Image (cartoon, rainbow, N blue to C red; front, side):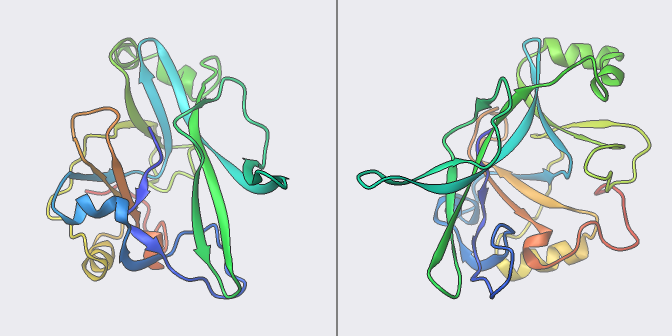
Length: 230
């Protein structure tokens, strides 16, 4: 899974705001224009742990935060990891930088997305590995999934058992693509974390565009709620 392009450009930040948190502006990002042109299929963006499963492998998605550091006078600045790169890290692509405009100048931040093998002798992989369905998925073709449930990102769906959702499934119909209607759409669907558009709904590695409810200043999970979209 490569970097997922935000649907909207980032909004200008006020003094003291966390520039790493994405707040959407009404301007559609250039690389996401195909969504507003009616291409692609909208699917649920789950709030969990991204995993890549297939061909006998199980990898989990990791995002390494990067920082800008001056290399030398000739080459100028380069992005380097803020933390150590985990063993077995397989980059999904080069680090993706974005510019966040503030009151003074602009700040460049970057993320490096990739995969690392999981330790299948540890939970939750031991529990998942005990099922026939899991064994079938691991032996099958490579696909990406979202793992949600107890112990995963504070379990916003309040599930009692782990659940695995394939990313290309859970299609959403009639999702608007303009700023105002999308904001209203998330208000009307308080249990929906986000939307991901897949340009080719059947391809494993296809251009992706996403938008999350938090980009409109909406809380997640909604107060008094904690269940999956339905």
